[in-house]
Length: 282
Image (cartoon, rainbow, N blue to C red):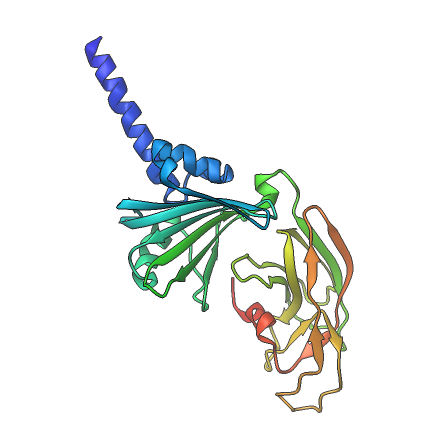
């Protein structure tokens, strides 16, 4: 009986430790979904020294660890959990190593690949698209890792959708990538690929936010031109690579909303930075 009791206590202690470690390695998504309350539950009494904040409809719990904890085999200086205004949840981790040193262990453990695009590196979960990650490096050398759960998963509210059509002078006779590119680069882009000659597109599962719509012919596109949802400004002379002939028009999405009738009808020879990422492979 004594052996059973001791064994049970050891198992319970180990399970508690594993749950905490798993949470700080972006593995306990049930706790992450609970936002500040999830972090408070993981820390127990230690959460009493954390700071709570309520800013612009976002609630957060911010904690500094002294001595540091461990995550991904590195020192964890602090963490914060936030319930954002759009309903998404975010766990932010402050890791001691620089981003260049931290990225390898994080990618290996989480099984993902960050897009190394300054100033913020981003990655999507290869299995669950409602989960997304971002990495940044502070001026003091601390690496900040963000693990975020989209509102469509956290609240059971369906994501937004955009439905539209390519209306180009010459429709690409090759497969075409069409993407919703978020103005907030910490959010994931959503793309669909159309067969050659197909004009209609639909992009689902968008988190609430502001997006730019663009398309890119994957073949027979030597100029790497990009077409986008935009307002025409002027005619650009053929061969003038630095001519800006149209102004990008952002779309604001809300959870569960379907935006229809969107036209991608302006071709950019000088591609704006906001939509140039469409030319990068996923």
